[in-house]
Image (tube, rainbow, N blue to C red; front, side, top):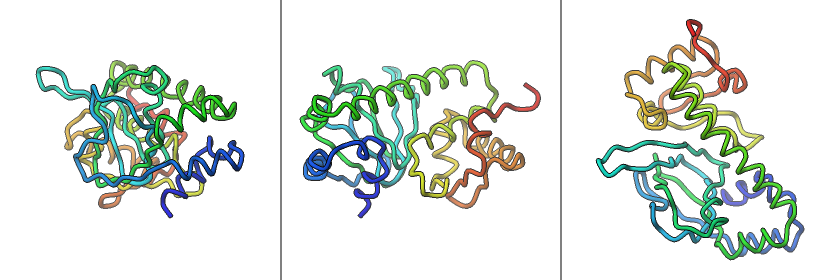
Length: 225
């Protein structure tokens, strides 16, 4: 069962006792969302903590002038949305599917119950928030300091932070979807992927990207820099 695979590979789930795990399984819901549809929208009340079971989603915002910016891409194994729940505020971003996706929805009441009852869950959230802060700082640094090839490399690498440990590092994603995540044109992403493939960091198949060296991909810098 896809949901059970997600839960079994979620670090926070492994630290819960049997009663807590049972409550999570009983309370959590799943939802399938088509490509280019909203998972949640900016300004909505935050009612759920989300986990990506399958597919790819992006966190983004659209300015008043219509300009869109992607803040983060999330692959299977990722959990997101805890910030709005912890601060008890409405969503400050949109979450949109890049392809048909299946999401796990943990109700806010269950999330807060775990927060009150599990030290292990609290430790996971501290780590998660610290990791997310690092991702956003890195994204700002990447945009200002790195060339296009390195920006594409980091955009791919960051998606695997929550990856299921027993799975191969392969993501079903098109070059157009990578372009959306990196904020670049499809043509420029195509060129960057070829550079990364030549460096032995990835292998590109139709609709798929295989990560061959995640550590080097996450710190890749073009030779001329």
